[in-house]
Length: 192
Image (tube, rainbow, N blue to C red):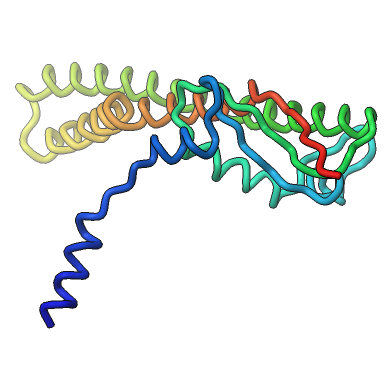
């Protein structure tokens, strides 16, 4: 019984030294390397891609997306592809595809953030207008219609406050994440 509690406490207070682990495994001279082992170009480029319009293999992309979350945002990232010797054309296709797909991800995130900003502006206008109407109308209306304006005001104000204090920080973090991916360099390490 006491041994089980001791184990639970040990697990509860176990600490992770992520920064030291990252420095040991993936950091070198202030640059973070994402090592990826591949057998062929088919591990990187989707088999559904059309020549000239290649896209990344979804499993390959998931690996990169999961890995980058552990790397602190202040470090530049290099994708280090370990595998066979690729031809010059294959290397060009891989580099272009990685850059294109990451640019698409960044563009999609920027459009999403722009949509949220537009929504924020509407919420700000709604808060101001409904607050103004509420303050002028409360003198002349009895309780039931007044409650309607009160609810409308807090509907707008809630979305406005949530964006400022919660969502804006999350959107900036996501934009940094995708910006790092779009700025990522690609290097090849041949394993013969």
